[in-house]
Length: 157
Image 1 (spheres, rainbow, N blue to C red):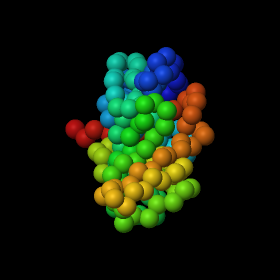
Image 2: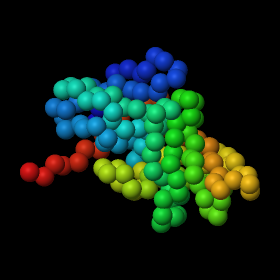
Image 3: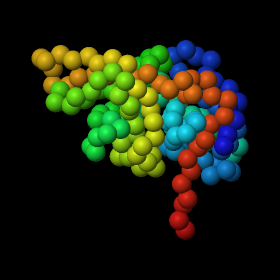
């Protein structure tokens, strides 16, 4: 469990500074969640007693995701200028509708399958294109967190 110390002051960059760091087992790439498994970002920088969380809405953020009921990966969730999240590279054959729950796919090391990302807000389809795009709405608990949880993995020695 970590307390949010500050949020990025820049509207284009979306990150949090938390009060846990390397001394607490926090490492780069670990997922950061709120509530009952709602992922909000990943650790990108670690100091002894602090760490920086890159939020999913940041333009530099990328995360492999899928639909809650699918077995295979759906696409890549990307931040959209710090304002929202989109999934790109969704095959045209994949049926995706508004309100569908999006979760982590489990393809990224250290990030297990099933962490909730958000729900589909809208889908952009163009039959002339190979892929479709979906806009994702984050869960309300993820918007202004005061406390977060870092999912730390045990290192075997």
